[in-house]
Amino acid sequence: MIPLFAVVRISTGKDSQPSKTRQGPLPQRLGLWIPLFLIWLLLLPIVLVLSPIAMLGCLVVQINPFRAFRVFWHILAGLTGTHIEVKAPDAMVLVRIF
Amino acid sequence: MNDRRKEVLEMLAAGQINVEEAERLIDALEKGNVTQASASDSSSAAKAKPKYLRVLVDAAGDSEIAQKIGGSKGGPTQVNIRVPMQLLRAGVRLASLIPPQAQVHVNEALREKGLTVDLSQLKPENLEELIDGLSDMTVDVVDKNAKVTMFCE
Image (cartoon, rainbow over the protein chains, first blue to last red):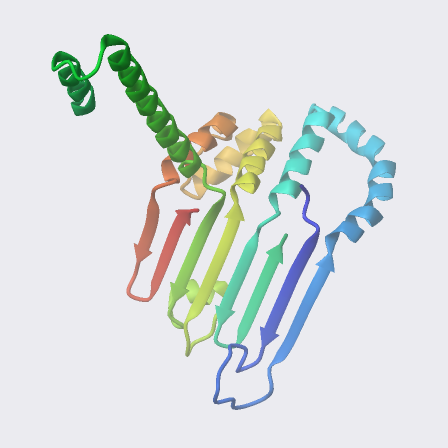
């Protein structure tokens, strides 16, 4: 199953991590819920239009285009469940794909 | 001969049960053993199939790892990464798509970096073996300034 949603959270500033004693400038926070299924829907016509060119490219470099498509599909599907979280004193980044 | 089987035979010898009953009891014991064995096999198989690779890094602010990650001095930097095994498998399959002439260049570049990996020998079956081996293993790298933990879950 390909990923349907992604969550991106970015916090910057001195106090990006929760703290009771806040000092300095206010932290800047950005939280995004990205509906990936909409992006896939938007990309689908583009992929269909570009697929003959991609197939031709695969044949030029002697790669089975169907195998290449399967591998890219597996990579896309494999992204589901990815979780990346980095916490530093002045910044926090979280990326979740599901 | 296990203890229960011995008990059944002793009961038969003592005349407490007849031959048919003893046979039924022994059959039941054998079936129970097979069920137990299959249950333990299935549980170990389920255990041997981890879904994610976890990488945890806990580095002090002035450590080299924290600087590479982009952390600043003055506080610890923590990294928590969960990579699905499916993605690793797909990555290995992607390596098999690299044309042979390009694989030579990639192998050379890896060798220059100190990694003696032959991409042509990298196959999904090898990764499965590696994952099976990693299922019960935890890699801990502890430095005075940083700790890196890798495990499968």
